[in-house]
Length: 312
Image (tube, rainbow, N blue to C red; front, side):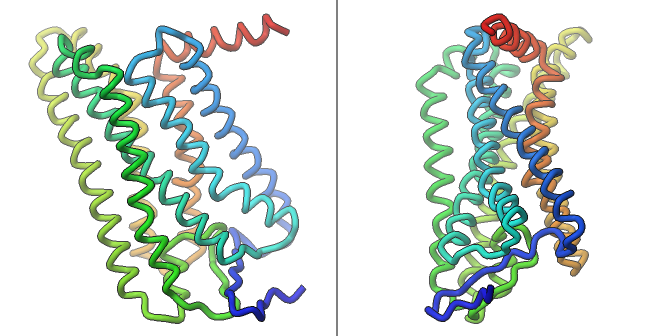
């Protein structure tokens, strides 16, 4: 079928990871498996935390919300990719592309801000343990969560709304498996100066301040831990931050990898494969990091699985 649109509304074609017909079924099976692991892994984290009263603490409150955000983040791109492979169609509508870009940005920002809130939680727990329950009270946790959602929802609007002012050719081929904002901007037929300025401002602000907050929190944590005289005390203090630090490193490491790959290579296919790391691999790995490195999560997951098996 001819994908051209004669109504004046542009049609976007997602070229995907590969155009070779022979490996489409392999890609479908691989990404469906990874997507299901991501969804069920993060869903298990949410269920384990909600079902175990011992995990009703600020750290696990933010972790459960991070897992929910990871499910949504992955679901903005992978289901559409799988649908396109299954139906052998590359088409995504103009409205669908704008919507995908918006929600992809929302949940990407939400992940970033939740990691910052979790860093603050670890800072209070390690540096001010006697005041932890007073400072990290349920009201503050709820306010921080609302704030992260509010900033994410509003922060994603400028980039998406300014896309509406651009004009495109009748058929636009996007060398990606989802509507990634920079790639779509490069394909616009009109001037994108304002869009690029807004993109750099939002990326700079939403990247600099959360990362600065995380780095400051961990600088204070390291400073406090070094003052502890016993080795056991130092290990116990660091062990409470290990999982979060691993997730932060993975999140920012993959984002940095995507940025560097876009600067150092002009091969679009390389950038597409690197994008898989932060759109799918990072959300998939988070449950494994927290379940394998955290005794409380292991106990909660065993308890959840035992209750499920005993009820059958």
